[in-house]
Length: 334
Image 1: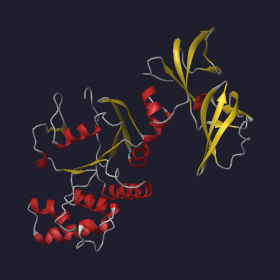
Image 2: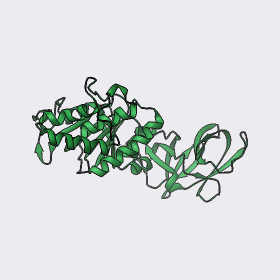
Image 3: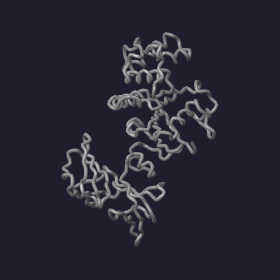
Image 4: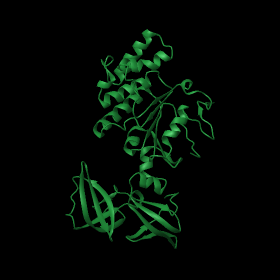
């Protein structure tokens, strides 16, 4: 990793997002004190903690596989860290019961952890992590081993719990939907570096590079040439000409947002293509539209009246909302 720098604010939830191998878990291990960085320093509330042992940092860590102690029941798993810290037995009991109630596991204290469902194991691991009231809670792919339906429900509950506790947290995931659902800000990483930091909506609406756009599944990317003619900025592409918001010259890549096309003719840009596929996706209908033999993906509300497959369709796009331009290197956008 190189050039990693970001701040975490009190009670904020940050998601470290990126593909496998980009350095997310390594960065989390460095923050936890499990690994040590080759360069740079880590500060907590203004104090340098590079040489502070992991167990003295006051941070909590929850792993994907939960690492529950199989020979201990639910209560004993949650109480383990509290006892190790020297907390009085009566206080341990009170704190464990409070935490079980918080995560929705009232009455589960005597249960054998091997008898728990995946969701119950996840809650037990979370309870163990938050019981000591850590200054910082770190979660490394905590929902990765749970099925999608359960994951979506637990994600909502997890954010609610973290908010209720005003818990400062770092959440590691390769899943953008998880990151966007739980985080106040997202740190999107690539090859050991930060590509973009910002609120979820900002990252989705204004990806800072071609990599970010492609990682988010925004694949309507069309090569083009920026032309400056008499003060008018235009991009020439295989499917037509597009207005440009700022002066650029040379080769560029155009992004057409899949969720920004309408059929009512209200946009400044008109495109005509052929509908070659449409797929029902709950409240959305995902379509593939061929425009001058280039297949592009556009999403519409499911109740939108669309032509039959093989028929022509006219799209309307707003230049400011639907179109984004990346310079050839993909480092900047407009």
